[in-house]
Amino acid sequence: MKTKSLKKDKVNIVTLGCSKNIVDSEVILTQLKGNAIDVRHESVKDDSNIVIINTCGFIDNAKQESIDTILRYADAKKEGLVEKVFVTGCLSQRYRDDLQKEIPGVDAWFGTMELPMLLKKFNADYKKELLGERITTTANHYAYLKIAEGCDRPCSFCAIPLIRGMHISRSMDDLVKEATSLVRNGTKEILLIAQDSTYYGLDIYKERKLAELMERLSDVEGLEWIRLHYAFPTGFPMDILDVMANRSNICNYLDIPLQHGSTEMLKLMRRGTTREKTEQLLDTIRQKVPEIAIRTTLIAGHPGEGEGEFEEMMDFVERSRFERLGVFAYSHEENTHSHSMNDDVPEDVKQDRAASVMELQENISAEINEQKVGKTFKVLIDRMEGGEFIGRTEHDSPEVDNEVLISAEDTYLRVGDFAEIKITEATAFDLIGEVMTS
Image (cartoon, rainbow, N blue to C red; front, side, top):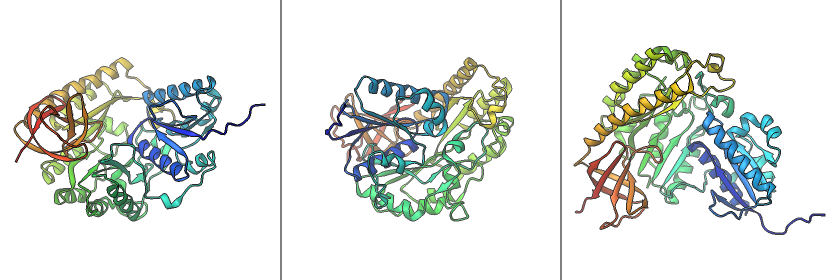
């Protein structure tokens, strides 16, 4: 009979997907450590006997990456390299029944809101006293702050409401408490995230409260940058622009996923707006915050997107001159409204259209960056790599945006500090600079 090992458990958390999942993994990490369990995030050592995989289930590529990761650890369990495999997150929430049948090697599956059940597998308690306390897995000087969970929007292509449920805002007091704790532990930049950040407050305060939240966070002593992500354009709360313009520690940066530039496509996508209204909104944002950098996300190849609609999107990108832009090829997701439509754009056409958008954006980005040569920017140093210090301006979010490269040959900078950097060269997606000396 096999005897139970007396060796102490070591747990490794593997995170896939977006920044919201990073926060969820950090909460799991914090709770397990609070229960005196030996746990790491993305451990480079293969010495953990228990693995928790926090999955993404948003689009095809992300789902496949999650499935491949689960299979890899299920195989490792067969080979005796790990003892237990637990799966949580969006893929598990959405496809748990099917996955249990297909991958029996997983010990337990958990949805996105089942942390207490996961903790029970470790004989651990959910410690409410740890609310507002979070061990971060990003670089120590920046952290994500999830201000809400779920989404009430009816977008035709999106499965998030099926996975995460309806919108639930966190209280301002809890968010300020968490931000204060993060700053106390060395965080200088906080990135506000949600499925829909501009909806914040409507459920618990009966009105949009994002502007007030930003003001209160701006008052947290020692917090030098606040960055806003995932702002939905329909019903956009204009008062956040006044706060952004008036508060020096709120970055002149806005991530506002617009998805398309054709009114007909926006209607099919159930976005609740038109191209004309979108362009008016962009004009207002730039008038109120002239120094702002706008990041957007688009979808190429949604059902019904013919050549005419795609050309409208290209024209929209050309005219709008976004400082930052990403594009996805449409993914035909089960149980969404779009799934009832004919997926009539071939995969190779979707990919070609996405590539065309990015080629256009590369030229726009190069022109915008070239205008920064000779100017000086406050830069947050993220890391040192290959003989260069790498940082970001207030116009750039980590992982997805431009970086500033500074030669380390004759310069010493400390990771996590700010520096005044004069831009000497520019490429399409990066800036090269040197430290300004007094």
